[in-house]
Image (cartoon, rainbow, N blue to C red):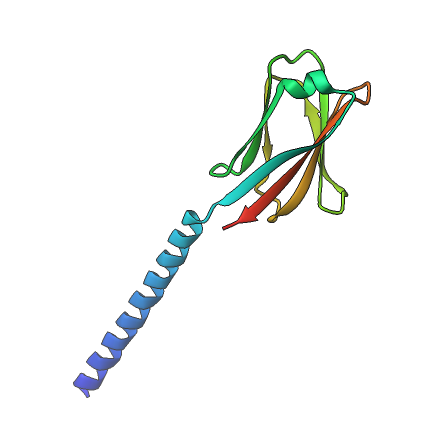
Length: 131
């Protein structure tokens, strides 16, 4: 009887240990996986001088897109659209640098439209891929 109890206890401990190992592996795998991004300018309309001074760089580790410009004289409005071109995020950019958080969005193709009060605009295609 005592041997059966010891065997059951040992099996239960082994089961708990294997579950804990599987959970820690899945957490480690999730941490290793990062999204990757590709950014491509697709439209420039009446904004060539502004387009030359805007730098857009993805930061996959922090899951955001970094927007940078030389000066912050004008307010620039941004609109992020999904692949069907439905707006999913909007805002204003009135500083030299801005970080657009991409974490809430699933992998896919997005369009980032930048424009000012004179309706001059730039558009970038952002491809987010999950790995």
